[in-house]
Image (tube, rainbow, N blue to C red; front, top):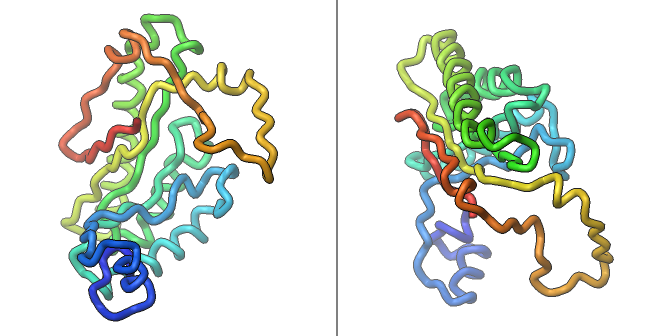
Length: 207
């Protein structure tokens, strides 16, 4: 954070200046990790361990800038066995220090018939409603007037089956420059499939 927003004469703020950006970027919203319930993540943790890490990180960041907006990691997907309990555990501990909890949703059009694919927004609605209900239950337990918002910060069409069927043999010591990774060619149906979020959502489209 000091590299991005720091104004003092510090190691990382000075590194930013050396790299050609004298003024701070003044980034106001920060996500405290990414998909931390996913075993594919290097930093994978159980809910309680992540909750304590998020809380301590949020407190430290707020000591520097009380006005930052912080996003705690929610479940990586609706199908995760951690869904629900994960959000409850995180928010039960860090409710007062975070503003959002994240939500990710990808749809594989090849895994559905056309009608089901185009109606996939209904599943996203259920996911959002579930996260909101869980957050509100924790808020009620804490007798808080604060409302945790939902950050839909990853969502897209993803032909995961096609990706998994390809043999990707990148050697660790011989990576090609800008290697293509998980790239889809989108159709008109892909563009048509969209979902409206409630006023409790902050949506950041994923390219």
